[in-house]
Image 1: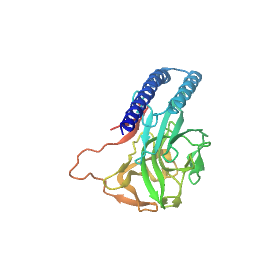
Image 2: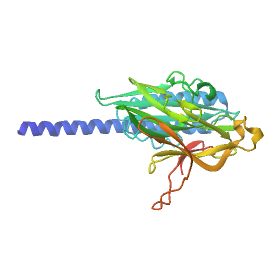
Image 3: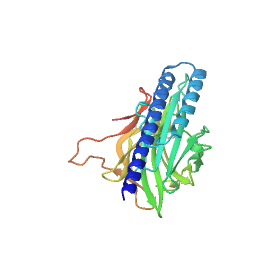
Image 4: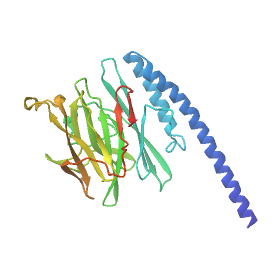
Length: 296
C-alpha cells in the first residue's frame, strides 16, 4: 500500500514537471511568434510580407505540434483567429495578410483531437484562390481550401457523427465583402469543408455565401438562446442592380437558419430581438481597421 502511494506521488510529480516544461516551451514559442506577428503587421512591400508570413507560418506550425498546444491560448497573438468547438475536440486557427493592392490572402491550421489514440492531428490548409461562385456547391479539403477568417463554430450532430458549422468572413475585393456559413467535417484526421446541410430558397446547398457592398456591414451570428444562425437580409440598392452583388445592402429585416437534427432550415423575416432578461449580445466580427477578428 505504501509503495503504491509513493508511486502515485512520484507519477503525479513527474507529470507536473512535464506539464510545466511544456508550458514554458510554449510560452517561449509564443514570444517568438508575437515578435514575428508584429513584424508581419507593420512591414511594407508584398515580397517582404510574404517572407515574414512564411517564417511566422512555419514557426506557428512547429508550436502547434508541441504537447499542450491544443489548449494553450496564444493570447499574445491578438490578430489571429483561434476558436474551439463546443466538444473541445477541434480547434480552428485562421489569419490573413493584406497586400499593397488591398487584396488579402488567408492561412489556417486545423487541430483535431483523437481521444482514443491520445493524439492531436495538425493540418495546414493550402489555399487555392477561386471565386466562391465556382465552389458554392462543392466540397473542398485541406489541399484546395478557398480561404477565409472563421470567427464562430457551432457543433451539430447527425447520425452519431459530429459536424462543425463555421461562420466566416472574406474581405474579397475593394467593392464587396463576403460572409459565409460552411460545414467542417473530418475523414479520419483530415478536414473537409462543404456538406449538403442547408435548405435554401435555391435548393439544397453545401455552404451559404453572402456577398454585399463594402460600404455596408452585415451581421451574421449564432444566437444560442434561440439556437439559430441569424443574419441580415440583403437586397440590392435599386432593382436595376439586382445582378451586382457589390450593391447589396441590409434592408433592416432578418433571416435565420435553424437546425432540426438533420439540416439547417431557412426561416425568413424573423424578429431578431434579445430576450428581456439580457440587454447585451456578444458578437464576433472582422474589423477591417484593426485587421482582426474582434469581439463586440
